[in-house]
Every structure is written in structure tokens, then in C-alpha cells.
Image (cartoon, rainbow, N blue to C red; front, side):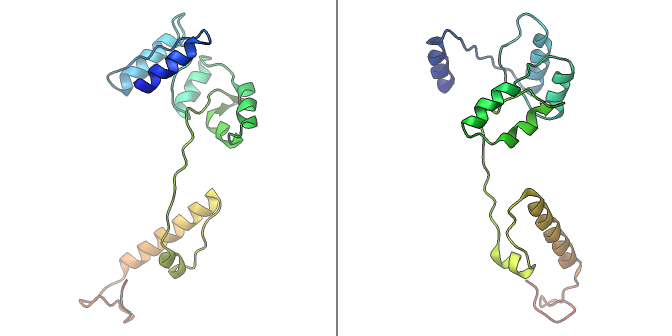
Length: 157
């Protein structure tokens, strides 16, 4: 919690405070926070999930519209598409705590064997994944001989 202590100290210079609360598990956190959101003791900021969990809070009118805050994020270079995860009925209700990028590695020989190109969009990535699943399924259905050859006589990889 040392990092949060430093954040708390920095916020004091601006007249803000940071109270860190810990919970035994996720269920306890969710139920405690949901119970306090409609009370005067509601936290000004809190960590939550996007998607259906956030949508339920939006439908209960428990979250503030942060659409204007996204303009500042975009001006600072944050990918505007990230807002989609926090957007309901055209309004943005959350800001990312962090942005993480995950690397995906690929096997050039497998791509060559399946006549695939490196995907550059999410739709292309999903298409490649489907192609590879079909290829694996077809490969696993082949009958192999004791020496590793399939019924066509070629060596299995």
C-alpha cells in the first residue's frame, strides 16, 4: 500500500484525501459499495468493472456522467475507443485506472502452413483464430499410423 500512501500525500496538497478500504473478497466489496452508493457516505471515486456490472449502476442512476472528462483524456493521447467499455446510452460513466497492452506472439511456420497473414485488426485476429481452430480440429481427426503417418502417407507434424 506504499504507492497509495504516496498518492494520498500528494492529494493533500490539493485539498483532497484518499481513504483506502480493504475487503475480505470481491463479493464483500461489491455488496458494501452498492449499499453505500446511494447514501451520503458514498465514495467520490471507486474502482469498479465495466460492462454489465457498470450498466446496472448506470440504470440505478448511481454514477456521474464523465463524458466531458473523456475530452481531456483524448487530448492527452488516451485512445478514445477505450470509452466504449464505459459508455451507456451515449454517455461515458467511467475512466480507465490503467491501460495495458498485451503482446500476442505467433508461429510463422503455422501461419505459412495455413496460408495466413498477420492480423492487423480485431476482426482479422478473430478470423485467424477460427481458421486455426478448424485446422486443428481437422488435424486431430486424421488417423495416424504407428510411425506417425496419416492416411495420405505424409509425415504428421
